[in-house]
Image (cartoon, one colour):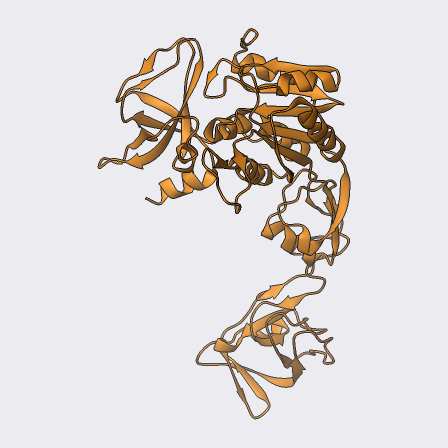
Length: 420
C-alpha cells in the first residue's frame, strides 16, 4: 500500500523545500551553437551599430542645403564627383555643389549629410538633375542608430532566438556565455520493455517512455542521457541509478513505482542516500504512483510506467525543475477558456487530469473534447491532445456545456487555434 497520498500542491511544496533548482554552470559557445541557449551574462555593446553613417537607399550622397528649392519644373543641378560602393572606404569628398553616386549600405562620404533617391534625380553628362529636395539626415542610417556603444543590448536570463543571435553577430561576437544545459539521465525499467528497432517478442512492448521523456527534456532546455532499460531487480536498478547519479544533474525513471512485487524503485532509492524518498504517491489520476527522491543532492523523479501518465507527471513536476536549472525565467502556463463538449468524471478524492483537444463550433466558441482512449497506458492520449483540464478532488464531475480552463501543452496549439 502507498503511504499517505499527497495532493499536487503538497507534493510540490515538499519538493521545493527539499531541492532548490539552480543553473549548473556557465560555458562559452560559438555563435553558431547559441540558438535556444540562455544568456549567463548581460551583453554590452563594445561598438556602434552601424559603425558609420550609411546610405539607406540607392541614390546620390549630397549636402542637403544644395537641394533646397528643387522641384519638377526647376531642378537643382549638381556636379558628379565620384561613386561610393558597399564595403569600401569613400575616396571622394562631397563639396558644395557636388554629389556622389552611392549604393544602399555604403558609407556616407565626407561632406555629405543626406542621400537623394534615384527616383528623384536624373544623371546626364556628368551632371545630376535633382527634382525634389532632401533634409539633413534623410535616407541616412546614422552610426549607432541601431545599437549604441555601451548599451546593454541583451540581459542575463534571456533565451536566444534567431533575432538575438543576429544582434550578437552585429556586434562582431563569435562566442557568448550561456548556462550549461542540465543533464538528465533517463532510465526505463521493466522486463516487458524492448528497445525500438529490435524484434518484438510476444508479451513485450517497445520503450516509449525513454524517447518521449528524452524529447520532453530537450523541449525544456535540458540534455537527455539515455541509459537504456533495466530489469525490475534491486541490484541492477541500484547500479543503474548510481551510474545515473554520476553522469547527470537530474534523474528520471519510468516504471517500478507502483505496489506490485516487482516495483522496487522506492526501496532502492532509500538505500542510495539521505533523505531518499520525499514523495511516495500523489492523489492524482493519472500519476498516483509518482515517487520523488533527493539523492546526493540531486532530484530523482520516478514516474509511472504508463506512457501518458509518465509524460503528464513529468510535465507537472520534473519540467519546472529542469526548466529552472537551464537558467530560464519561469513562465506562466498558457491557459484558455473553453466549453466542455461532454460530461467528465473525476476519481473520488484525487485530482483528475482529463486530456482534451480543442476545436471551434460554428459560433466560434472553443470546445474542449476529451481525447478518446483516455487510459494512462495509451500514448495517443497525449499525442492527440492540445492540453488538459483539472478536476479538483472535491468535484465529482464537469457537465457538458460548463466553462472549463484548459492548460496547453505547447504554445503551438494556441497559434493553431488562432488561425482556424
